[in-house]
Image (cartoon, rainbow, N blue to C red; front, top):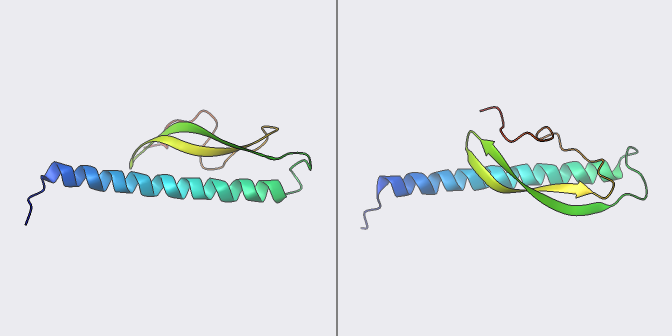
Length: 90
């Protein structure tokens, strides 16, 4: 049996939790923009326009490249965090 240092296990666990949080936040935001694009609030000539990357500091760790969806006209705003917010209130 291999002995894995405790700090290596801690780092692995923290990375897994951070990745889990990132995956779920991105999933929520993809659902948000899909609902936004279908809503009456969205202009018919507006389209999705890919993603931008941002950093978000959470109590579960730092998410370095969170993919945030955007629309062409810049009207979409996620409810996951406020504009320019970099910390989740931890």
